[in-house]
Length: 86
Image (cartoon, rainbow, N blue to C red; front, side):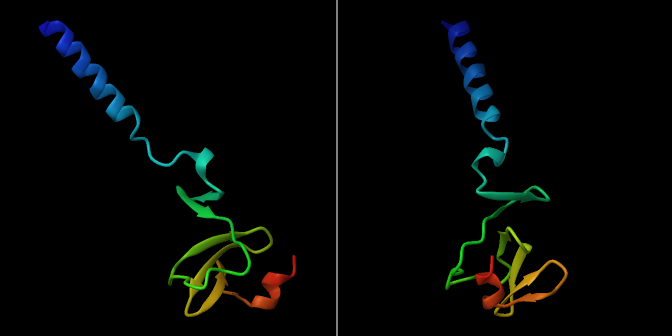
């Protein structure tokens, strides 16, 4: 009985730690950048965009919401008209 309990405990411990490996790349709906999942950009952008939010755009790459604008990684501001053209 004691051996069965110990075996069950070790198996449970193994299952616990094997499921803690972080984000699965198969569940990302965009791209991975520096180990972070950046979701795809969908126009119109979210009205409640949060400062520092990152989205991936097929044409412009990774966009960051900064000071009320969508900005590329090289600090170029992308206008709404540019986002409509694809």
